[in-house]
Length: 451
Image (cartoon, rainbow, N blue to C red; front, side, top):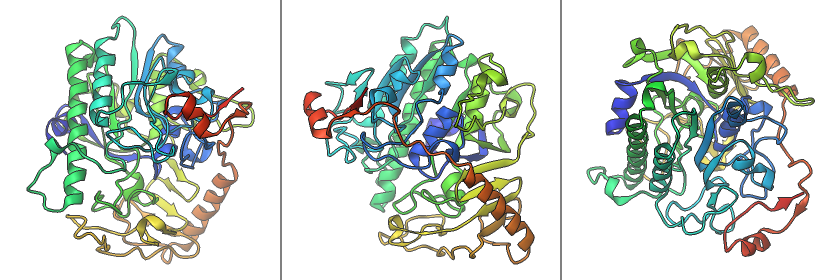
C-alpha cells in the first residue's frame, strides 16, 4: 500500500480483514447505496447509458435516507447504478452534488467511454460537464472531492461518496507515479494507478482535517471487487479475482479510519466479517434513525439486508455479527466459517479458462498470464470450504462433509428463488437513440429516456 495511504490504514485506521463485496463493479455500488445484497437489487453490469439495470427507482438510497436527517450529500466519480432515464441520475437519487461518469468505464484522460460509442461520459448535476473533461480521472475526481469539503458548511453533516475510476480499465496511468524499477509494464501501470488513488485519498483526509471535520468522521475505504488478476492485479494468496466468487474476487482491500474510530482499534486488524450492506445500515443508524426508519419496505421488492456493525468500529465495541449469513451472489454464500460456491465457470476474461486460479507473490510473471496453479473447478454439487482453516480455498471439503454441502446447496437455491433483478426504469419510456441524444448534448452521452 502506497505511502501516506499505508499510514492512514495501519496507524490512524484499522484494516478490515474480511470485507466482502460483489465480484464486479455495478452490483457492489448498487448494494452499498440500496442496502441490499446484490441478489436482491442487481447482479448485472449495465454497459452504457441505455441498458436497464442498476438500482430500481422504487428503492430509497442511502443519501436519500441521510437527507431526512439534514445531511448534505455528494458523489464524485463513477456512478454505474443505471442511467437509462433522467430519474436514474444521482441528483434524482438523493445526491445534492454530482460530478462523474454514468457508465462503467471510460478513457482516464479524455472521458470518452467505450461503453457509450466513444462519446464523452462526464456529468455534473443535471447536464453534461462541459469543459471539465481532458484531465486525468484521478486528479479530476480527487480535486473535486477536496473542493466539496472545502466548500462545505460544517454546521450540517456531510455524506461524501468518492468512487474513483482508478484502477479500472482502460489501464492508463499518470507518468509521474511510475516506478521504473518495476520492469513488467503491466505491474508498473497498475502500481502507478494505485499510487495516484493513494495520493488523492490523503488529499481528501488532509482536507477533512484542515476543515475541522476529521474528528467527527467515519471514513471507510474499500475496493468494489477483487483485482483483475487476468491483467496485472494480484490478490495473492487468495484464490481468484475479479469476476469470481472465490475470496480473491469478493474479499477486498478495505480499512476504516477517522475520529469516530475507537482509539483502541487504531493500528489493529478487525477480523470480523463485514459486507458492504452493513456499511449502509450502520451509516443510516449513525444519522440518528431507528432500524425501522432505515428499512425500506416496498411491495414486491426485498427489504434491506445489512446489519448494524457500528460496534466493530465505534464505542461501545461489540465485534459479534447478529447474522452470520452473507449472500455473495446467486452462485455463492458464507455462513460463519463455511463457504459454498456452486460453480466456477469458464470465462472469456481468462482466455476461456476458469478464473479461480492461484497466482504467486509476484504477478503476472509474464504477459501470457499463465496461472501458477490452475482453477480445478467445482464438483457437480458445488465447492465447500471452511474459511477458518483455509482462507486460500485450496481444500474442497464436500467429500468429507457431503451433508453440509447438500444443506448449503439447498439453502442457496432458496436464496436464488427470492432473487430480484432491477430491469426497468418504471414509466420512463420516451426513449431516443444514443447518437440523437449525444448530438443534442454537444457530443456527451446522456440518459436516453424521459417520461
